[in-house]
Length: 257
Image 1 (tube, rainbow, N blue to C red):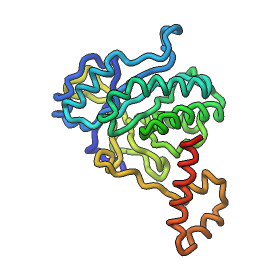
Image 2: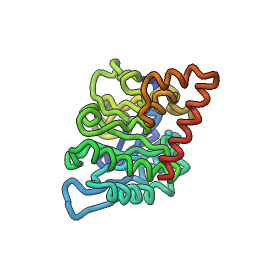
Image 3: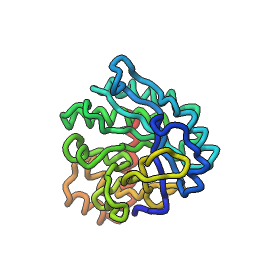
Image 4: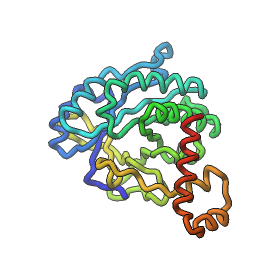
């Protein structure tokens, strides 16, 4: 369930210098800070760069007592480039690991990304798996259009959903079961110029509670099981525990590939 009291912002160099203490006093509780980017949008010769205000924003959020995560703007054209971009990201965020309670996110929205679903999904998964192997929880930031038309299932990772609409009409966890953060629009925040992107978190986002995992659904998806097979597993005396162990074994295998 989305908790409208868990207000957050996501920022990059475009917000300029930020007074994070003022933002915190205005009710902001968490921030997703841009760390790195693959290809530049305006300069084709600029590759694998760190946002110019990343360190400044990390210091500011830390000193203001905000919970924080970092994100990378993905531009990879293949899996090898995705891993290279993940290495750039990890290099930038390593000094700030202790401050990344919200982990990492990969921003998947660039129009230049491959349009073949399987290809782009493999690229995103390659980035995410590299970051996970480094010990960071990872989310995918994207929008409903990409989820429907550009990507296959990536529900093994958290979802940071860009869906701009009335903030009193949150997306449902039934439709987006891996939802962690909802970017609903932009609004004025003390200490930040203009109207930065506004976000709400799911209940428990900041208190260390992991999202509830539907082990049966995850095992079914990963193993390609039929509904009746999952029903039999659930009906078994230790079915729930078995499904949990199967899920953990599958995710461990994915992390080691």
